[in-house]
Figure (cartoon, rainbow, N blue to C red):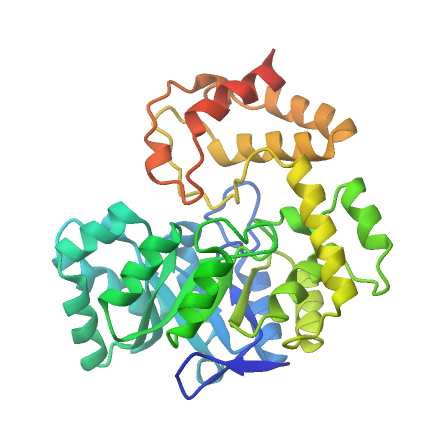
Length: 379
């Protein structure tokens, strides 16, 4: 495993971090984690050098933290830094801060959470937490030993990123969505460099854009096939990130053991400045091709849920995006999958209330996309 500086801390983090948002599940219920398999995967990663584990209060309906807690028994706790996140949407009063943190410590079976983040910082959530004096509370939980260091995960503009970093002098890290298709989205390359210049460790989430960059459509695969280095689409995306000196950790949400094995192997080949000029040109061509194909920037994070009308928003978005990018048989298949969904879960049930849009990290105008999905699949 390759290790990289973690901001100003006296800690070197594994290039690959285990993101526990997309653990393997039983059946179609995302809240029912396949615990034996998930624990086996997490421990395999740790046994092969991964030392940064990331979860959050709401992942898998709260079961992600519980599974991580079980995986870290039998001596594994001492081998890793554990990160999790405070959900601002559940914080109505300042008293909720302690309640949620202590619940998470119990789930994780730890006295101390190594890295504690404010989750999904966007203007409304940041404003709410500031009004509840969250920064004073962050001082207290570091002082009383329940938390090691603090940071935030981020889904907004570089202006807000700059504001948040400037508002508190004890940030150790920030977590941003970043990949070769998001250089100018949210924090983007500008935000990555700014945060790193301020001494923060920058942890990357959505390196494969919710898995979209792991399965290249034919026009993109043709470009990758012409490269001198033979890599899977996923490895191209990961190596592009590890090439950058500002990146501390790249999180991968892995749903199968084969993903863990492949990503660990890829991380072992990583390094700052490891890509050649020709390889960077390949990525630039891929960026241009994807820009021509892509229609909806959904990453399947699920923050838009639940929908008051019971629409399965992420599933509708995925069916639509995949169909538009891959076309052909994928379009026919996804149309059939859409029509096989219960009517209330289909995009056609959207009433345009826009409640989901307030929560969407990608700031997608979901109420405008839903009619397009129904027109494509339901007509």
